Amino acid sequence: MLYALSVVIILYRQQGAIFMKRLYLALISLSMLVSFSVVAESFIIKPQTQGEVTFVTGGVGEDERNAMQAMRADYNLNLLFSVKGTGEYVSDVKVRITDSRGNILLESVSDGPMLFAKLKPGRYIVSVEREGHQVIDKTVTVKQRASLSFTWPQEQDD
Image (cartoon, rainbow, N blue to C red; front, side, top):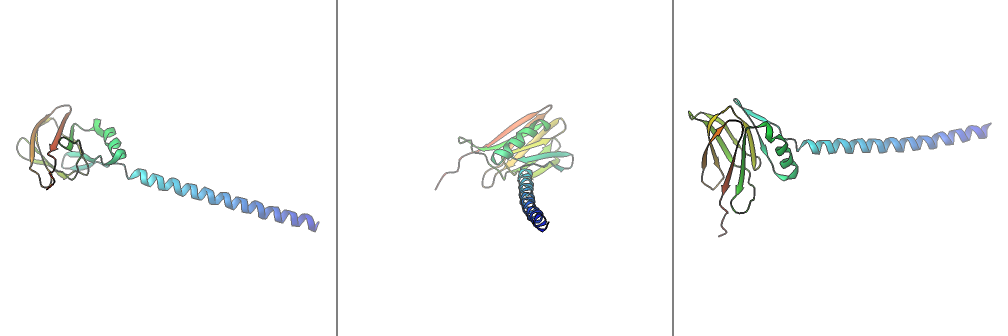
């Protein structure tokens, strides 16, 4: 009888160890999934609002570019910033959108080469400035959808 009790205790301890290993592996797997979801959330681009204008900006890296493209249809003004001749995208562009009366509707700095905005139908002036380069102004009429591309010359090496 004592022998049978010893065997049961040994089996319980072994099963307990197996259970603990499985529990440990399950907790590690769960923490990895949570970590991956946090990384994935960093690619979520959050809409911002200034007055009546909602906009998103980004597009640095493939994941952000894909996220921006997925959101593109939700916005009726799409802006793209690049270097002429190279196709290299640029960020940190100062953007100002004014209405036909000169009222500033949006003033921001792009986090990436794309900025998408929701505007009421109308005529707007979009002014962009990249540090060390001239301001570029373009007039756009937004009805259903409008896209503008802004390019700057390549920087010359001295």
